[in-house]
Length: 142
Image (cartoon, rainbow, N blue to C red):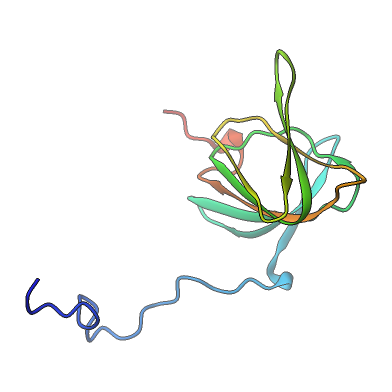
């Protein structure tokens, strides 16, 4: 380690500025789409690659979206309000959670889930990311 300056130098010395890897996404950049069959919800895609999709959900109405399964792990964060999260099971009603403002959640790949909103505890939005395939039909088979 002697003679090594960790604050300057390194492999990029003399190579010019680094290309931008992040960019700001403004409201006008969001790609809005309607997802679901009977119970549709608006989902705003902020960015999507083969490795990660990041989207927002703004809850307009009381109710729930269709239950869904993604082809990758899901991580979410509630921006405002309280998000209802239902994990249905084949044996019964499943498990219900209320995810509050500034709380997050994680769902492993293949976990069936459903988002919902109650009148008393509205969720004005949350952001979530899906690692890998967004749709379960896109999931690679081992």
